[in-house]
Image 1 (cartoon, rainbow over the protein chains, first blue to last red):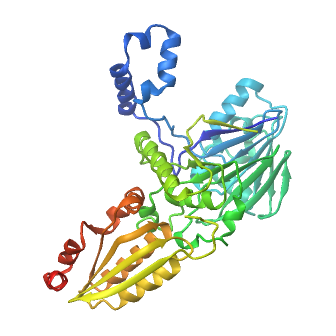
Image 2 (cartoon, rainbow over the protein chains, first blue to last red; image 1 turned 120 degrees about the vertical axis):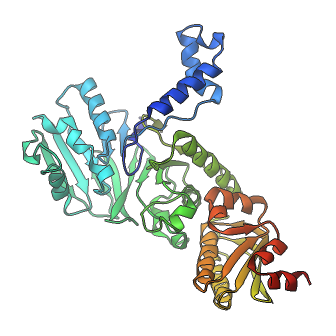
Image 3 (cartoon, one colour; image 1 turned 30 degrees about the horizontal axis):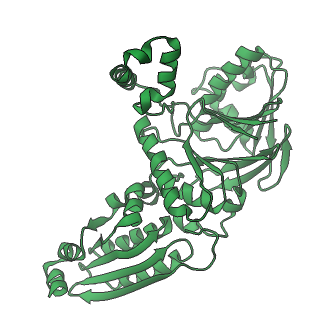
Length: 323
Length: 132
């Protein structure tokens, strides 16, 4: 039994499609780097591309907003947030399982800022009778938030037209719950409008989804409740949208954190793998790679006698395996 | 940083006055165990800076700094600039320089290459008092 954590959308604030210039730059880099042996046949081409054209290409992070799937390979799964990545997730499920899913969908909502809910009107299973969708939130106005997004003049199809059975569940923070076979604990994060992170456990693994959180440097102490919330997580999905300088000056109180603070907290919480998420839409792939590289250096500086902390940047389509 | 160690890390903050500039020297480590003390020390000195005067913080003997320490420097800068003064940081090297660069604090704070250069950025009088 293993747990897969799949990232369907990793961008923060607003989707960021690849531009024509970015795509052309990648093609140019590939053509510049490739030797005749690299493109001799399909297998050679595949290997060349998998190696990032010998490291000459940055990671492609993608542009969909927040949506993460945590699934047990034996069957049950949870989805977290309905960002624009949820449309891709739904398309994949319908392609592999047909329009009506055999099992209900279970979705945890961190909060209702636009980038975390905008995928729902394009979540095709919601339109199809026979599907069942359970939506869990610590906000008592969860249903109102979903209905409002479908209302005129923002969207042409009213919520009441949706054919699926949609159930809203208001859950309590800081309390262990069982949701579709997963142990789930919600915890409030410092973010405008109240966002909640989720500690999700199954099969001896711990995944913490804790996007949209501003951890001010002065909050960081041994008694900070967040440290207990992330304690010994296998994966911590962390909002590192800004640089530390931005987060403490011009973008203070905008609700997001930095790579430096992410490393500090992950080390304090004995986390094994820190995964950056909610990427700033202004940042291109090169800059996001740089943020990850620099965080790895910060981790080396701060680690001291500890076991190394793995640091990565999530990208659309990334699958991390646990267990 | 040994993040789980509750014992405060070693830190020493001293100050000397040169003309219209307060020169603060920091020795040791700043992390979450002692950043409140660091902030109090810096704020105390910043509040004494005369209107239009300056403050130089020499980090040449600082071994390590976390986000909370960087914030303390930023708050000291705000306190000094509120009084129309100027704050300059100098002496950053080694891992402290790396933390400044990665956090982008090297763009947020005025950073000088040496104490003399920092003093001259405050005023000619401060530079002369320091070198003389």
